[in-house]
Image 1 (tube, helix red, strand yellow):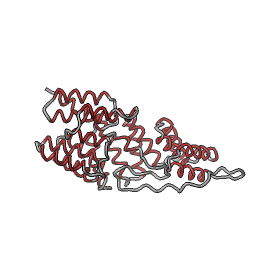
Image 2 (cartoon, helix red, strand yellow; image 1 turned 90 degrees about the vertical axis):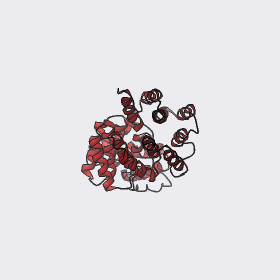
Image 3 (cartoon, helix red, strand yellow; image 1 turned 30 degrees about the vertical axis):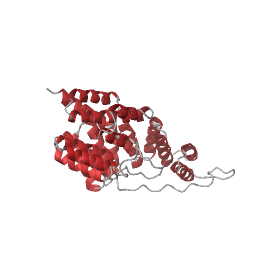
Image 4 (cartoon, helix red, strand yellow; image 1 turned 180 degrees about the horizontal axis):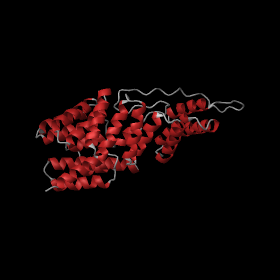
Amino acid sequence: MFLWRQWLFTGGIALSLLASPGCSQKPEPAPAPKSTPPSQPGQLFDAKSYVDFGTANGAKGDLDTAIGAFNEAIRVSPKYAPAYYNRGYAHVLQNKPDEAISDFDQAIQIDPAYKQAYYQRGSLKGKKGDFDGAISDFSQVIKLDPKYAPAYYIRGNAHYFKGDLDDALKDINQALSLDPNFAYSYFIRGLIRHAQGHRAEATSDFQKSAGLNFPYATFWVWITEMEDGRHDLARKDLSDALAKPQSFKPDDGPSQITNFLLDKITLDQLIAKARTGNGAESNNRLCEAWFYAGMSKRLSGDAKGAQDCFAKAIATESKGSEEFVEANREAAELQKP
């Protein structure tokens, strides 16, 4: 599963910071779309009106109109930070990270207390592999809002990707103390505990995450149960999870991985499915597919086949993916005498 895409929210543009998937906090709704743009001949509009119009159109997917409105807001008021923030968010949705970071930089320069801009900028830095930069931005969010659970969670993620497991665990525990229904935090804590050798605690976290409908956690329930020798239970739990429509969608990536782990499709079919998509999306799915294929082979005793699969997962260079991190960890373990 591609971690950092979880940081880039999939909802409409809004002035308020949206919560990460799995967090119980709800985003504020964007304004209802205006019937006509604020550009009638002879009428004057302030920057906020343009931003309101842009967020409304962004929420319904019209990013070009939204960006045009944010440009007008900046023209009318070059020091109006929300115009830069929202234009940056629109660029995120257009997969233009450099333009987005530039806009978030500008919003922060105008308003150094703009926590949404720090959060989004940190998200993009993390996606680029700049985990130190991401941690710095998320620390600023926490300074501005010490009770904001997603900031601890996401900073913990960055520590996890750096390999700083103790710091990661502290942040994830704090996130869960503030929001005990944060499914993704249980998943990451499970990965941390598994890496630290605390398999029983890891299994418990993966089960909690899966119970909150996070599909990738079910794979790790399967992994830890297989590691414990509970093969029949592992298969049953995975089959039961696949039957839950709120967790798995027909023919999506997690469903394909599950079908492979249950021997319903071959490795060639899994990889062929993962290759669908474009650019980074395809790389991410390939990294996932090769990693879980490697785990399947390792757990069946095929160390050479596992090492080959982990090498292919690493070769995707999907550095913002937990599977990339875990593939490196597993490959290193297999190389030990």
